Length: 380
Ligand code: PMP
Image (cartoon, rainbow, N blue to C red; front, side, top):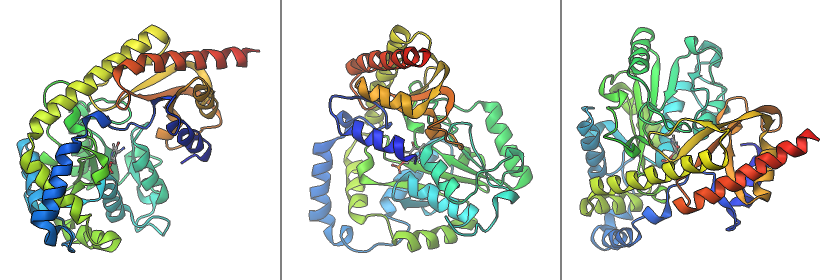
């Protein structure tokens, strides 16, 4: 994490007058607070001995069953025993990276020169940090031993992998024995139709599949999952036990109760509608206030990836934006070679997920003023 950017973003997040197009946080309006409170109360009263006791590292059976049923409905025939409950998708990524690439900061089992991870040009910063900490970002994608991908819905671009790319990736794994780390975090938040089948449905030997309740329900529970190739299960469980023994048992119990009482399909439909409206409002605001911006409308998820003409310095634009009352995520956060302080093309991730649609227009108006102000200033 670039310290200057981090400091600016923390200051922006703490200031309620700033319109936040940063962070990619889910909408608090969608958190089912009363229902979670009821589930929490039931979990402690009816299931307290289990919920508050130590549990096995793989996590609660009922939750694993629920997740395997959902994956099966999307065409992946996995059983509850293939699923490990993790502390968010982040821990699932970290466990998979450990198995595939060795420990962070230590001597990777397999050095990056022997492979490493192939990534999209822009990718999820939390995963990027995991790979960078292992010195395992592949210089040459053709020689990678692992590919980190978000086929159903990418972050930051909000796009879907094409059938040709999916087929190419699967045949690369089959031919080279390379692993595919499939991050399905935003899959269920597609705007039109249903999410595509996960790559897991087509390959159980090479695919490590990661999912989460953070985007569809709420991140505070910290519940995600990992499905690994069957021969890696014992190693994955060993790693899970080593890092934290088990995922928080109380939140697992709350979630299991919640899912038993909730219409999750209906919840997803409402979330998709809400975020689709946000995406539309943000795109409209961009066309209105920043017609120079280039972007593809997202197919789902929380954000729009935007390119502005010319070049600039990420940290400068962010500081100027903060002065104008708006924040965003600079493009350098999503790239292997972060250049927060050097001149580069201006790309930004703008999230529509965490402000009500009516504030998005104002946010983009402020951003446009900041960008124009900076351009004028630099011209002198
Ligand atoms: N993957 C992607 C693509 C994400 O955007 C995020 C959260 N920003 C995560 C994984 C981690 O999610 P969590 O740990 O909250 O489940």
